[in-house]
Length: 316
Image (cartoon, rainbow, N blue to C red; front, side, top):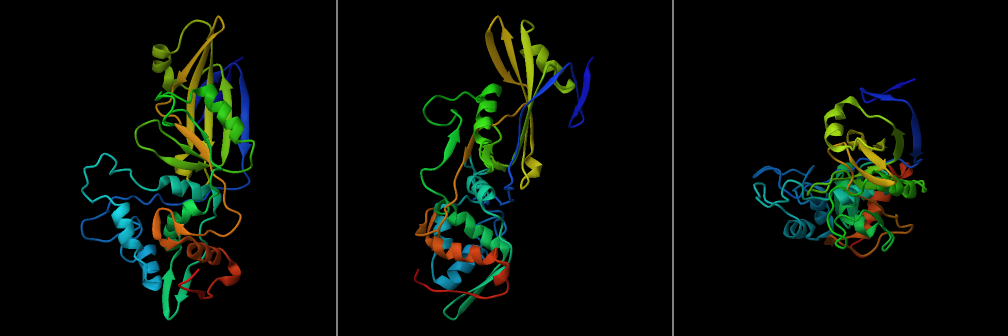
């Protein structure tokens, strides 16, 4: 008897199904913005998109600390509003936003910061922007776990990698830990990283009807073919939830495999948060002290300190 299943309103007729992996982290992802380098508008400043914008987090930081972080950011991480660079449309900080999404809850409260006689009001969005700047100082160095041969600079550039069974193996390893992981969701030139906190992988002996033409064209008619469905979801980036299909054919002991879905993950990784305070100059902007950002962030997520002015000094 055939089993009628539903996957995102696509019918899957299957004689049998086999759940291969089901995992959900107790630590949920949070939504952090990717902060594009490209200036939003020729004239209008956009502190909600550009880290170097007037009235943004860096601008307010400079006002009280006397630093030049806006100038530094514009010098090192900037694309003109009509830039023709190949990466102009996607250059930004999605890797840092994804790291924060995995490791740190989003700022909870606005914070007033006083340095000497100067006071600046940092909204949650402003604090988020400072978190992006301090992100690389907030993780343990040499503790990144990385999976995916493509773009590693060593083994070539196979746009189909990781293949379905390779992706399953990677997920089985990542899902041994109760912590979200990061994933580049497309195998194209642009890198789009997002954080994910639940996985469900199921194997079927059939496929959704929308793939009929591709199966006829690409999947061997010999041997036995199984179809893998990967549902990889995110609390913080639910609009980027992944529903991916691949196939594995076994003919006389020889296995070949590929993807039915147009896009599939490119590489996956996980970083580890520091357990102590962040220190030093921020790696991506040397005008910002990581410990100042750390104190502002910790103040923001403390309900006990909500509404209390945070007093900092020029020296830390």
